[in-house]
Length: 292
Length: 298
Image (cartoon, rainbow over all chains, first blue to last red; front, side):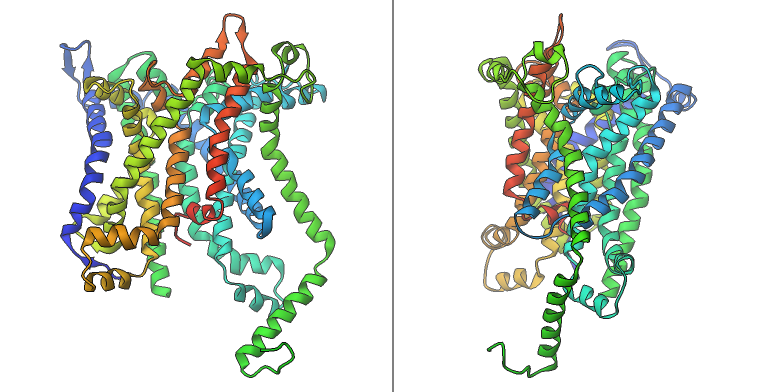
């Protein structure tokens, strides 16, 4: 669509801008302020410059948390994206089954995040949980409080349970927008199922998939409540992700300076990745407009 | 046109061929493949439902049955946990508080996001692209980063432990989300409609409320659904910004950790009740939800 150049559009943006600025810019400036100071109490503080940033970047515990975070985010993306596409392909398209499937598939997305943790805590406990108990009955010494591998697998399974629906729903909506004529053409050409998927469905899905991967990446990068409730970050610190390290530092230990510096580094990582995605989306829309 | 009449145009021939082709395909499609598809779908649904079933199972068992041994369904069926939650004000106020701030947030977000999304979808102006990206970055901001500053900010302005504080805090990610989704839906409305209305002498506010908003009503419905969803599931900010007056249900749930261990039955019942509002809401938007998840862009 050709847009009219009109700077008065700013007036339409203004109320939103003020509100978001109040809840984003002021707090962010507070964080920046803390990150360059050493605060002892309300009246005693020293300017420290980049010292906290250096300290944070060299902190092995945080480096480990960053690596863990990336490992986690990439693992769940690698599982959820193909699985989500698969679910979208087999979801019923008509009738009451379609409505029922939509509601059931959406359900995990609407459960408060700490309740998701609680659900899986109840589900996986060795004494009262169906999954934990079954695995033990089968002879596997499943224990998420002492075995890091079990804890990891469980957290990934929980995330797959929780968020595959998002990818599935995105792809489902992408698939529904493919005109029937495309499939008829493919049938006339006697195209195989794989060819239909590869050359008709997948290209149509790239747009929604970028949005899906973007949303999944950022949410997985902020994951807090689910592992906190399920494993508390343990055993040891094997499932302590970035948000939890940060919260422990800021609220638990009240280390304002270091945690503020850490916040900014954390935010910048997300920003960088987001920017890459955003540019990709914008370029894709440009290509689409050219094609249309 | 009767079915026996001969096709008159090439277009009609093609259409009929397609219909016949479809009919043949449906008959020829092997039954096993259909069943395999259904089986896989059923398997996924079971995977989704199993943990939730277990939660419900727990919530209808007495605590002695829960701890006494694993039972696949409640043998000693009881609603005592639900009764406890629904009669104790410290419990049910948690739900009322959560719903209150969610509704406030939905109202604030949609009111400021509508004009903003319109501006983004219709006009070019200085800094529009940068502004849009900045908005998206707020969607990406980890709540943990803002925890401490929010606490101090709302404490200073005297909003700590009120519903407004949580509603405003959730605006951080909900307004950008609303702008993003609405912009997608609005861009699907042809610009000629705006132009015609203005030529007919509509003022901007009247056009916007009388013509434009009804045209994107399904988009607004879907946006409200997403606002509900993200405000309802977010709990880190909500529980940090409140203590007793506006405590969300999530922080109330930590009460179940008593001296004698966790009260599993009540925890399960409280969890089951948090799923309910979501299912009610999703039922209303089920026909538009797929489009909404693609942010109105398919």
